[in-house]
Amino acid sequence: MDTRGVFISLEGIDGSGKSTLARSLVDALAQKHQVLGLREPGGTVISEKIREMLLDVRNDGIIGKAEAMLYAAARCQLVEEVIRPGLDRGTIIIADRYLDSTVAYQGYGRGLDLGFLEDLNRLCTGGLKPDLTLLLDLDPQEALLRRSEEIPDRLEQEGLAFQIRIREGYLDLWDKEPERIKRLDATHSPEFLLQEALLLVEKLLAE
Ligand code: TYD
Image 1: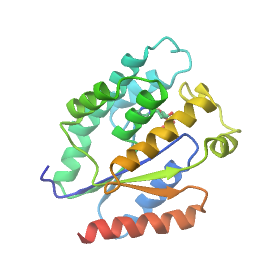
Image 2: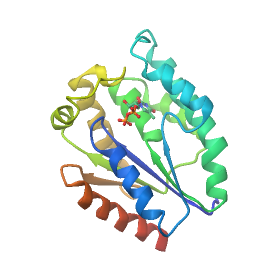
Image 3: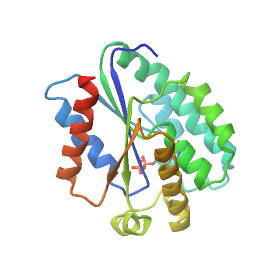
C-alpha cells in the first residue's frame, strides 16, 4: 500500500482508556503535524448511522454474523471516504478502533470464525492495515470498575466474561504481529501513556 500519510490505530477492551489516549495523542501531534482523529464505528454520516444501530441496547436481536458485517460496512465507508484520501494527502490518521476490534470482539468475544472475519476485514478495507497499533492492555475487572458510573451500551452489557475473552483475543493478536501491535500497560497514568505513545509514533515517523 503506497500512501504518504501514517495510519495509527488504538485498541483495547471497554474502559481501557483508549479514547482518552486517542484524544491527547491527536492534540499533541497536531502541534507539529497534520492529524485526523477518528472513531469506529463512526467517522462518516453513514458510519455514524450504522453505529447507532450497533450500540442501541434495544437491538439485542442482531445475530453475530450480521453484527460483524455491520461493523465492516461502517469501516468500508470510513476507509473509502476518509482514511485513504487522508493518507493520500499525507495526514496522520489516529483511529480509535479498527479491524483488530472485529477480530477481538466478534471473533474471540462472540466466537465467530476467525477466517471469515479476516476475509471480511480484507474485503472491507482493501487490505489497508495500520502502520502502528497501540494496544491498551488492562485487566477486565479493573476496566469494569472504571466504567461503573457509565450507562452501558449494547456491547458493554455483555459482561465480564465477554471482556475477558476479548482481552485474550487482543493478546493473541499482539503475539502474532508484534511488529505492528505495541502493548501499553493501561494501569499507568494518562500522562505516562501519552509519552510512551508519542515515543512510538515519533519512531515510526522517523522511519
Ligand atoms: P464505543 O462507545 O466507541 O466504545 P469504546 O469507547 O470502548 O471504543 O463503542 C464501540 C463498541 O463497539 C465497543 O464496545 C467495541 C465494539 N466494536 C466491536 O464489537 N467490533 C468492532 O469491529 C468495533 C470497531 C467496535
